[in-house]
Image 1 (cartoon, rainbow, N blue to C red):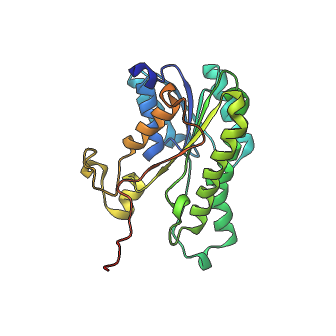
Image 2 (cartoon, rainbow, N blue to C red):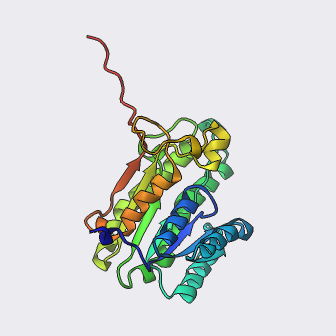
Length: 255
């Protein structure tokens, strides 16, 4: 039965794979026997990830790629196929944000966040589409709880991630006939290096077994990603899985 959760041999592209959730997914997939291509905007940031995977006995390729640059994205896909022969799973993890009130977000700031989070997902998915359809692939998009219910001072990021969620639903219907499953993960707070620098919470201080908490670890998002890439999720199509800990339930007023 555990073979249903296996991803051995699957050629997987992970964007934004230099740290945090992307790195955790890349390392997990490699540990499980997948052939992993990790990319980020700086080659020097992604090289150590691929080297670490290879030193651990896995197969990995590091590629420098700005996902807002269509030519760079197409080169990423070509490099993947040249190295490993196919693209079986695409993990659209690359993202970016900054906090600002809506009135203070410049046109350039808005376009930058939408380009990276939403348009970048479009570029990567469309560029890899031909190969994903050859044999039945999986697309795993990374959104955010901010894209589900909004978040103050994150209007640009929330709007872009809401677009990713809707794209997931729409594309899953369009590509189902090509045996491609498209799903999405919406993480809540996760103890990544970026969050640690902002909130002071280290992943080492987060207990994965504790239910009542509002911050998770990158490995827990990798758990969901592995499920979505594996045959175990064969009947899960077009869904956004929220991995955000205990939900924020409004207290009922006293009667």
